[in-house]
Image (cartoon, rainbow, N blue to C red; front, side, top):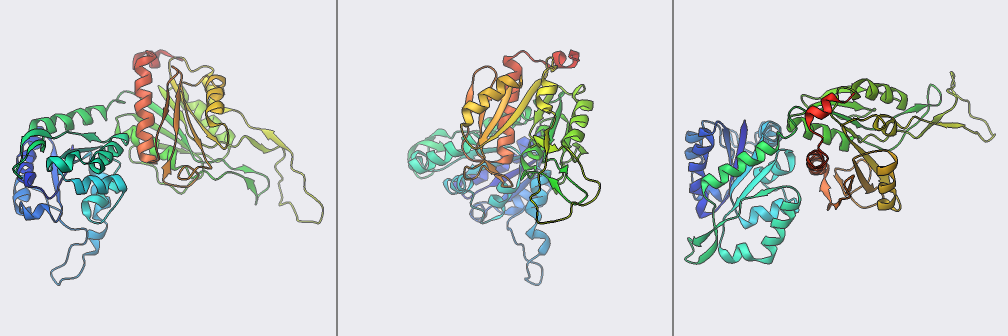
Length: 412
């Protein structure tokens, strides 16, 4: 597995060299990214020799002629896609603040925003900096996003003070890496069916009814599920998004096509997550020729489409079924009603009129309503982070409801 190790500018930067060796002994491949401050304490050559890989030091590396290397300008995307975990040790107060606030002004901070891999940070700093309200607030923001924090040890610090702030022991950091990566494969053995995107209901050869769904939320769930070890079917309405790696995409257009695709694959699935924005109505009549414009009002008769979630959940057996509720009013009330009416185990609800939670944006603000009575409101997060939190809740429900993989597979 590939680990990207971010080393930031603190006295403890030299300890990251031993960390590289320990990670390699555990069978990990390690690539190091150094901030400008880190290079004041340790040279890139040290980490290159230990890791056997290129050490990345700048967002825009210079060529031999002093010109910006265009390949380096997008290298953070390539690193983001191939890494299985991002570890930052030591993590300074500065880097914690940048991660928490989404500031991307060097390779490491840009990489953090570009990757969907889990993040482990091991802070190291002066005791007063660690205890400062701003640092603690940033720590809580990162924890809320699912970041694993390896708290610093207490003891004598390089500044001469005593207290919390020393970089945690390398063995503790490696143990945290193992723990996170083990958790990230907690869906191995599961087959997850995910729906995503809008549907298009044709009125005539030119016009159709649809909605504003981009598919980003469903695609993020599919990618996260695959990263966590699941086999994934992605039934997708029309969207410009590329299917995540190792995910089997089934492209559909209408609600009826989506219904058929879901029905065909539901029997193989152990978990089903319905993130698609399926049209509730379609034209009762599809015109063979384009409807011509005239001065008279046009009346279009609509008929309801099949409620896919309700239909498959009636015979779900031991499967876990997750639905989405995009609301504009009474979010909690409507979500709880949907949870019961659809026989779902989890409803992901949001107010699509709220800032950062609407269609075709990269963030979401959701509340998870679970069958066992738990309501979990989350802050505004990226859709990749939201996907991880949804899957965390699915894993929790699997244990609470007793829905083991064997039970899933025995259900018909």
